[in-house]
Length: 354
Image (tube, rainbow, N blue to C red; front, side, top):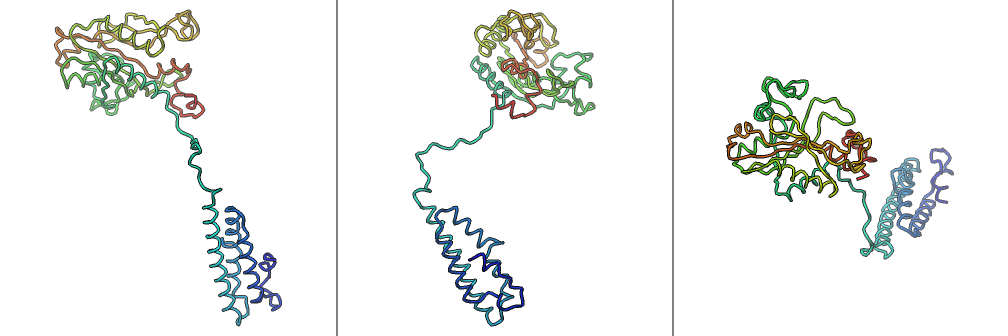
């Protein structure tokens, strides 16, 4: 019946097709009755949309006042205003009643709803684990700027002028004339730390470093590195070996062993590369370790006396060791990852594994 009233074509010239006052009063009662019979909050909302929304029946009736006979327009408008106000009031009263109904109250004894949360990135998970291990061994964490001068990146680290790392083809310079570049290693933090205080030093320096690398499955132009430094009286290579052995056993398990191979670094003497037992084959030889049973994880050595003298430390009284590890490489081996680029692509399918 209601729909029939609203479908009356008030644009017809025939007065028989125009809605009469009595018909409008009857329509008002039917609309309010239909709203009042709503049994749920959701049905009340449906009625609100049906009758009071922008394209609802009541606004449509208002638009047709101009088509009503002149002597009826005033009363017609009064009835419509009354209908709109009563409908709003009735709907709000019904909604309040349903909201206060026991069936709609929140049960505080129910467990909370689980919401989707972000995952802890594997790279930072590894970084924090490394920091925790070294803190337990007495090391503190030091940080420094990512834009450095050649002095802190090369000169203070005993890097000769002819070294390839000093070329623009290997390092990312911000301004070559000002000798400013993105740091290629966090060893610069070690220099800054030693300049500002007196020995002993026992620090690790995790952070981003940058090199002019062609990206592939094992290299990126930006990556995270961790440098370690220990300087005190009578520090020996044996302490270096013991420190790294304890670290890798904490990180990869007590069955892990390490070996040191002679190498060259301008800032340490003697220098060595560090290998650990292959995690996949346990040292028996496999494709991961190229059948050697060992995986290279970093470089280390005794701090070069000249480097100590560069920062004003008496090399006759103090000795020390330093080491450098790639956090991405440690992460890849820890979780069995094959491509370093997966770490940085922010693919949720990858990140949700951790």
